[in-house]
Image 1 (cartoon, rainbow, N blue to C red):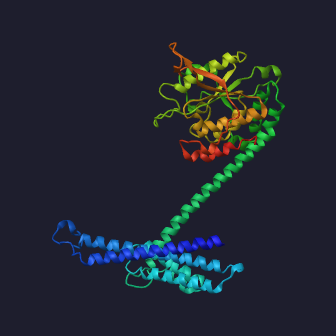
Image 2: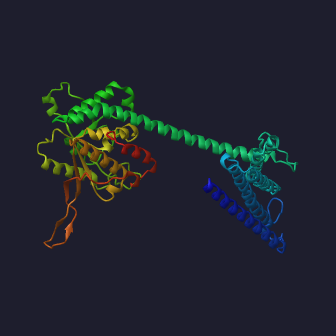
Image 3: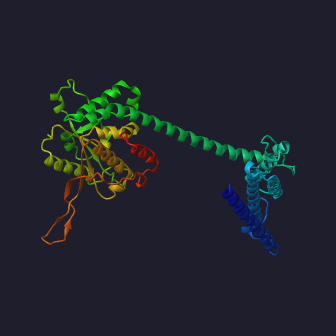
Length: 460
């Protein structure tokens, strides 16, 4: 409580100083205007078109009201500080009734002074808040009836009355509090729904991964990932809610991907949904698809172009190059069984929620991950969350492969030290890299909650 007292004392001192400065400025302004003659009414630029009042005179009045408003706002805030000090003094273990009463009187006096300064004030909001704080101070000492007259929103506006401006209160307090209240309520509802959705996803992860997928990964074996895909597909078949929540596994056959010439969008319908084999013997399992998950950065800077690739089709060509390098390392993987998972083709780009939610479990069903590493890859949040997922899976189960497609360096022209970075190479990825998603960049900052949710992988 000592810290609270120090903060309140500092606030009171600063508010008192600001009120004094505002008063000094107002007095100096008024004094300076006494010696300034009214603008020449014969000067057309200085006349108000409606009533002929000098524009400079109007400006002087507006400034006077502004300086007065500063004092009113300062006094209202000062009243609030004194009320808080009074409440602090009333705490049982440091009960100081005399101090509490003294501070409450100061709160009422400050609020009353603010109301007195409202005479002729044009800003209805300033007037409304002054009466609100005065009513609040009166309510604190039990003067309910008197307090109600200051924030009764049902008062009728009386333009001839010099007393409480009821119409101003209606326009000021009601409009501002209701508007801000609605905004706060809407914000709270959005946040609440986001929390609920996050809870539903976590529950879905837990049930799907821990109960259905993890036992398969723990068992391992040559056909582990084929069995994992069947387990995931069966789980979605049996639970309509989870099927709505999480996307099914889809892929693009490599032989078809080679013919595309560029990255193709999901709406073109070129991806193939995974379907478990009719017979589930070892012979069929060995003929199953070999799926590579590609993690890459969207590099297209043209906002009108909905493709993640640039005009040179850099990422598409890098994908083809990475596959060739991968097949050179793993000739046992036949081209006909090789398939590709890429978000642009396999996740519904017009409604991506279920695809994004399923990302950890989709990646777990792929045999290998290849990261197309380039400038800023490790700075991007979506790339990093995919890297974090495969890192976690590889450490935990040792079933998956993980490579990085990076620019290689080699000497050219016979001159030592001269490097050419245009040739790409495939290298195994380290699993000891520290990945902190909170520090990563996003093109759309509103995606961060989804990224941070995915950071909590199902295996953790």
